[in-house]
Image (cartoon, rainbow over all chains, first blue to last red; front, side, top):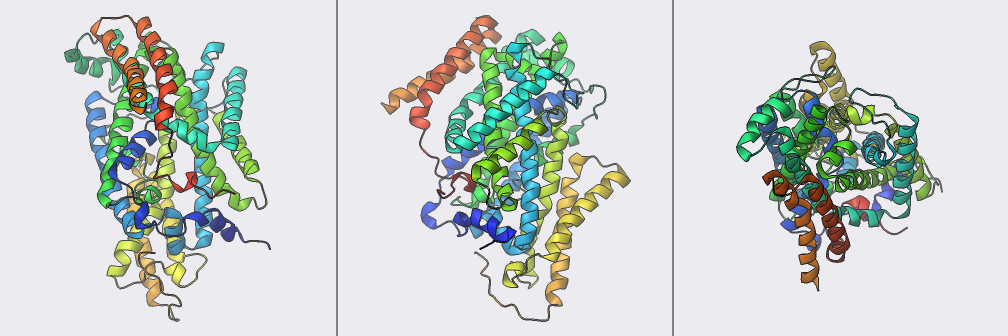
Length: 470
Length: 68
């Protein structure tokens, strides 16, 4: 019997329909390890250098990362974790109850597309390491399009291998990724420390002077926006906005015994998004000083030689694989009857084509900000539905209780928040890095207001009761 | 056996990161550091999968799909 697109999406996520039972809850160590591993990835080889290219001053970088990462940790702990531990549901099922199955399909497809681009940037990162032995001309900071035939061939090769592994054995890659994580973090540390003498740091006391004069000089590369303290704060806060304010990490934190486990995200933030970004920034400063290549592969080679190259490939590969897999899951809803391998292969092709464009890697900060902006409004909808609606005497999970296919308040809140962000950008020239927060609050207010209107003007009684914890 | 494997893995991590500090201190040159990092990488990846290989308990949903 033919299924609707919503039923197909439900079938894919069927296994996670029920709240996590008490016996399956996990202790704190798992969350510390999970967050530490997830946030030391291939992107870190790009983001640190891009801060240097955007002319961040040293004090702004260190203070900005301290504050921005703290705000990210607080968002996980106070926004995402409490709802995850009270409902014990993943994002998919919680959103389905609130927004309705058809809006969820649209959300899932946007998510899948973003995953494809994210995985594409990881393939680009890995290609910069694979191409070194073959003297491949590296893309420069200003490059947007494929720069050489060698680049195209290398990306196609890396993309094919990554896609093939995603088809053949995703579980093995996940296990390998777990093993690689501690080693990768130490490669970052080693790279940064080993090149300090070449930048003029002879003893620890020299570091701050060199940091200001040579590494984070406060002068942007031509064509790049100058980053201030606030840019660093908002970028580091919103780099994973889809996960905390966007509530995607309900999927993980629903296993936490206590909501306070959200604070374990600090392991990911301060190891990956502080130490690794600082280390890769140091590497690119040396590359710029020597007039060499600034792509991830060459800078990692400067710091750690062959081990650095392997780290770049591993970091890119282990991040791209689960991302392709997740995108494949989402895409399955619009490809009825396709075998799993066909969907993954199709996603791999889209991802590899995207990876051909160095713009994705060299404009990663903008892309990451866009990724967060597109998804955070739905997180605000969940927060409003869970905390605000019951206090206003309104019913939560309204789409489920009224068997609605699409929740109008959620749709208007999501699209309206994006339109509002676009207006802020056009009318007030507010850069993309700052748009996520107003968009989140906009969606929160609009969803609450429209829910009030919708439920107060409803003419028929609610047909199915909806317990708040399921 | 697990303890021995963990010790070997720790040695691999030490060989990955300690040489960088020795370069900073001027005790070894960059080439030696890069070579030791390769040795550390091999030691880590050969030993760690044996004791880190078990399935992590709190896997996200996309890693815990029901077998088709």
